[in-house]
Each structure stands twice: as structure tokens, then as C-alpha cells.
Amino acid sequence: MAHQVLVLNASYEPINVCSLQRAVVLLLKEKAEVLEQSHLRIRTASSSFVKPHVIRLVYLVRVPRYEARKITRRALFARDDYRCQYCGAGNRLTVDHVVPRSRGGRSSWDNVVTSCAPCNSRKGDSLPNEIAMFPKRSPRAPSPSVFITVAAPHRPKAWEPYLGSLAA
Image (cartoon, rainbow, N blue to C red; front, side, top):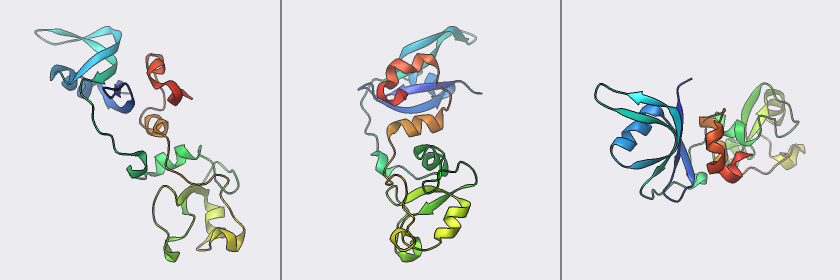
């Protein structure tokens, strides 16, 4: 697996995970500083750099609200703990619109849930109250930790102090 680097905003808020190459570019352009580093070094013909684990941007960037982030299957499944929100199954997962698109439902974080194929098929284009199938949890925009988890399922120990409440 490629080396990944945790990117923090100037306010120390975790905002992204990037590749080692992207992190080095940010460091060379003096747009970021190293907070945690490996004992290994990156060597070039004329110089040597620390291998970063965590970098912090030196300027504050405006991060889009998590509600505005694009819905992806991976992020949706991670938000719902890889479980059907109707029966709790963990296999044959699909995306279900709580209010079906055929009934005017939108593709937004507050209208999509993870569903297994049998539950999705049984629900069809019915509203939850018509068929008595209600999601276990109300759909909502995911927490920031979902996007970090999707980008880096295996987090290095060096990241934990910076993830704080996202570490769960």
C-alpha cells in the first residue's frame, strides 16, 4: 500500500488523507509543515527530507460542509457500519432511497441508506410507512471520520493524537 499522510487544517482539524508525493509537494512549496514524521528519510540526488506521517497546512482552508460532499457507495456504507438499515444484514449491500426517486425523493445524505438486496427489492418504490419498513437510524450527513476511514481504513498510530474524537 502506498504511504498515506494525514492532512490537518491550520486549525488542526483533520481534513484529508493524501499521498506521500502530494505531501512532499505541499512541504516543498511551504504550504504545510510536518507534525509527525517517520525515522525514514526521502533521499534525492542533492538533498534528504523526513518522511511525514502528519502535516498541517500553514493557512486555513475552507472545507465544504460534510452535507455537501459527494455521496459515494463507500462513504454511505461506512456511515451505516456496512449493515442493512432495515434488517442488519452485512452482505449484498445496495443503496436505498428512503423516499424513492420515483416519488420525488432526492439523492441526498438525509434520504439514502444502506440496504441489503432483498430488503431493497421488498421495499421497491414504497414509502416506509406504506410497507412498515423504517431504517434503524435516521439518515444524516456523515461525520468527518467517515471520510478519513474511507480514505485510509488502516490508520497509523502517529495519527491518533490528531484524530481525537474521530479515532473511534
